Length: 338
Ligand code: NAD
Ligand code: UD1
Image 1 (cartoon, rainbow, N blue to C red):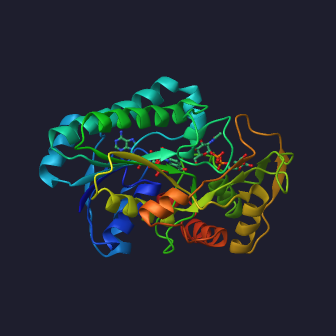
Image 2 (tube, rainbow, N blue to C red):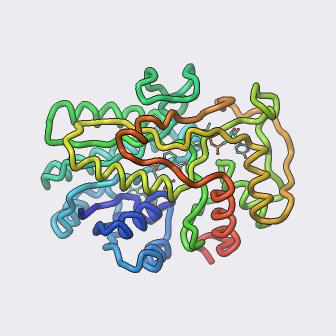
């Protein structure tokens, strides 16, 4: 297939581009480079040995996006582009709602104009919100998020479902990611957060490389085995392969369907720190701090649906995630800025 990937220079998009190219798909990357670098595009080519097309543009620029559709004639779209920082979304809700909704509306109108109806959408486990218990299954309850970023995912899932129900030509996969971490095993592409990371794995990596002094462990009094929060970390290459599987599924008429992409296993904060210590061969200083507002004790995926319907299952363990994250961090101490 010829696949247009919005946000294709970003963390998950760049890994997905590699997986798509390796599976023989043609890839068209569209990215504003607001939260990514042209270097990522060069490295995708280096890893895959094939070059994707690249267009630097904001998908909200509908005229420019339409020109790309006209030139490239994609069969399907994977839509990663958007803003994703939870804390920032609480501080600037209007910017988040506006950006994530407007960009998706612009994309949907452009797809409609050009007769492209196959879409894979980046959703998040954040749509399971509060009041539900792990493991989360796709039909487990009402979708509700606790912050504006998560609410954009809930709203967009609803909007995409309505569109698919109204017009049977649409085929839409909603992929709910758990906690993507790690990097491509080449060490050439990986996560390159702007400023101080909000998420645990990139924070640990930056402590390990010496950019930050210590990890703050947000609570060691949870009702979990070691008292720290447990999450379903998934290797970003497994996640990327999940997108290729979802794209294959779109060859059948599915209408709209949600799939969890996780491993089905939970790992604590302490266990993740230990995995990074083993990977980098150094001890990683940490300090137990108060719980972070809005955090759950435990979250992990029920992966049954993705396994049975997509024929996909994550295969890389926490040690591989830490090892690959560390290879990326140590080879690129300042991310793509090096
Ligand atoms: P990222 O910021 O690395 O990638 C997003 C890319 O989109 C960036 O390269 C950015 O420059 C680009 N972009 C943003 N707005 C754009 C616009 N209007 N037009 C064109 N390009 C634009 O983020 P990521 O971690 O790769 O996340 C990709 C998607 O997955 C996002 O939708 C995110 O909400 C979702 N998601 C991420 C996680 C995670 O932990 N990383 C978890 C669940 C869901
Ligand atoms: C967070 C977001 C979620 C988003 C996801 C993207 C919040 C409340 N939730 O999820 O909406 O979809 O990122 O991957 O922000 N932790 C520490 N110290 C740190 C950072 C985190 O101890 O410096 C702990 C947290 O308490 C949690 C675990 O590590 O138990 C994972 O945290 P994080 O990486 O931020 O992911 P989530 O909270 O699952």
